[in-house]
Amino acid sequence: MFQLSKRVEYGLIALRHMAMHPTGQVYTAKELAKEYDIPYELLAKVLQKLARSGLIFSLQGVRGGYTLGQDPNKLSVAHVIRIIEEEKPMIAECYVEGADSCSIFDVCTIRKPLGKVQRNLNILFDKMTIQEII
Amino acid sequence: MFQLSKRVEYGLIALRHMAMHPTGQVYTAKELAKEYDIPYELLAKVLQKLARSGLIFSLQGVRGGYTLGQDPNKLSVAHVIRIIEEEKPMIAECYVEGADSCSIFDVCTIRKPLGKVQRNLNILFDKMTIQEII
DNA sequence: CCAATATAGGACCTGAATAGTCGTATTTAT
DNA sequence: ATAAATACGACTATTCAGGTCCTATATTGG
Ligand code: SF4
Ligand code: SF4
Image (cartoon, rainbow over all chains, first blue to last red):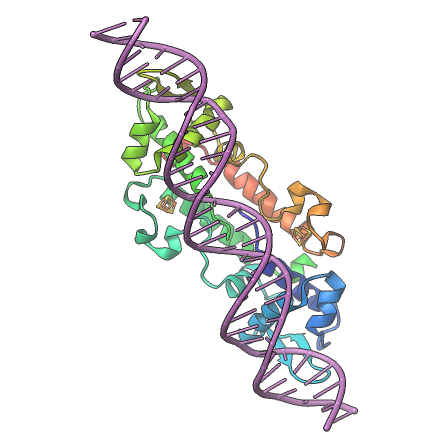
């Protein structure tokens, strides 16, 4: 319970790697996968997703790869999570899926307090930048 | 991702229910399950676990049930989670399962920053008591 | 004593979500 | 042209949470 998904972990690792080295440098999914011993196809998908949302730039073809598209100081972990996980619920499903998603919604007594936890968690991830995890 | 398990939610709901009403009162798993429309067997197991670790008292036999064993002011949500989930990992598995659990442990670069998140989350749940969620 | 009602707890089934794999198309530098 | 890279959809496998079922044991009250 409460684990970060591998996809998010892999994404963070890749972003951190890019942020650590001189900007503009291009990294291929292959070399990153090898460096960190991550399944290539899986990492590739994550990078594609990050690229699609403009978080990193992709260069196709020979000598292509990925390069950091944003200042790592301004890139929050929360943002990365949101992109990779899309709108997956955190803490409690009813927050995202609505009242119908939970059969005990209208008698549930812990929904509100959990909201507080959720907010605090958001703040935590919002404040944490890629630069910070280097 | 990052969801509280149903078992924890059910446990919190039951504890909250007990904490709301006069102390000493006995509740059966059956009536709680009905009241909140929770699967009886599942709730029963959660309550058994809470009873085993002394968090609530159990009375067997006819007219038995459960009764709150502790001051709700002193009972933290963190404690409840730890009892129900035992030593399930939060945030990242390597914290509990050790280095061998993750193939990229020794090249992983985000382990330490995730530790910070974990600590903050612990603080959050530690501070939150059952009394508080009433 | 006996029947009813409750907890105790193990075994099992199921479906959904995650992790990982494969195949193929497309792009581009050389 | 070829090789090396991204793009992307479809597929498989594994894991885990949620839920169910069954039996044993304890306790009360008639
Ligand atoms: S209504 Fe309550 S039990 Fe249901 S998902 Fe929301 S917080 Fe959890
Ligand atoms: S070593 Fe890194 S990737 Fe592996 S479980 Fe720990 S934090 Fe996650």
